[in-house]
Length: 173
Image (cartoon, rainbow, N blue to C red; front, side, top):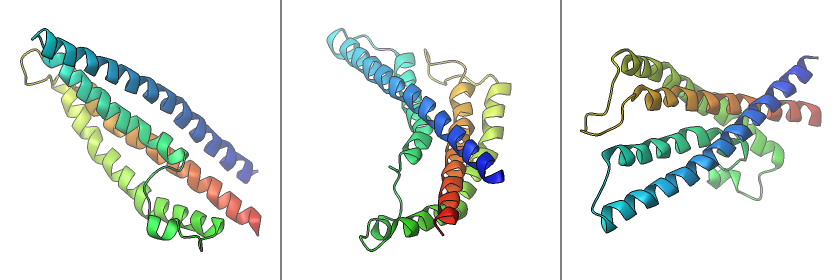
């Protein structure tokens, strides 16, 4: 029963990562279109916008923050490739590397970032922080709030992947 609940929770983490990954792909399209528009306006018409440039940076940050969980789900993150890609490493040994890496490194790191970034975002919200540049974006707290959200998504995917690996390792015996 517990095993079924754990697998279901891992599947929910996978589904969430997939949905956010699709949203992130559309953010990339928007970022490319926005950058193209900004470059054309700046170099052909000598007209630029600080707000557009900041929006490009913010979209880039969102792509990185929200795309991390999707990348982890699809097993495309950088890891100890020297060991992991060795033909001598079995699938079970790779699972052990993933579980140990998630538990000892990834999850503590994500917890630290989440813990320290919440006050950072909250402070920006309370003070109604805006861009220091004339013509820049308002509501800077939104991009700062994306930091704990992105790392929470990454942590959820790491937990889901760890659960799947542990269940698989326990049933292979």
